[in-house]
Figure 1 (tube, chains in turn blue, cyan):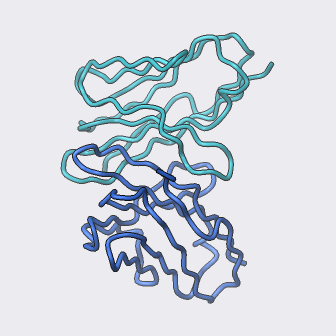
Figure 2 (cartoon, rainbow over the protein chains, first blue to last red; figure 1 turned 90 degrees about the horizontal axis):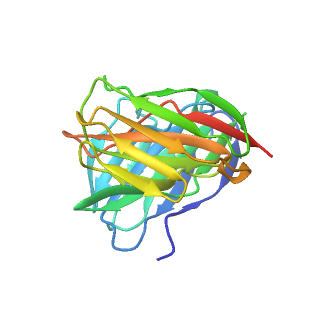
Length: 113
Length: 111
């Protein structure tokens, strides 16, 4: 069990560029979650998957954000036309029902200049 | 909107002191999790409490889930500099699998 991994750990981009982040959950965890955390705040839910199905999306997830989990294993989160307000730590977590405890990865810190 | 309020927001204490962090909501949760987060890292799970009134101990840390499943507390005995970090509570509502996070308590323990 290697834990949840995320790549890259850090990303600096210019406003208007597209970025994509990857999350590999704990193996055999069928639920995968994305959260966003800004400085001084607790994480906020963005979306989650059960296997390859995206079951819930937050209103925070604007049209510029898209998440996929095509084979029910790793997931990607893409942000199109980045804005300075997108600067944050993007966290991924996974869980395996019936235990709903969520285990978090190290996060991807995004800075939009 | 479900909110979790944590208090205090900041806590600065000397090594050896005891402290309690509170996590309160007007909403009922199926379970509640406590995490500790270091700067630039993801939250690391400390404990999950699922039964109203439940008390769990993890070495010098004692966690309690309120009888009504709306609140929780974290008590640290004889704090050490290694306890320094951001402590987050997170509740799991009944009607969804997402976590609602508290506002966080930033703890600094000085030697």
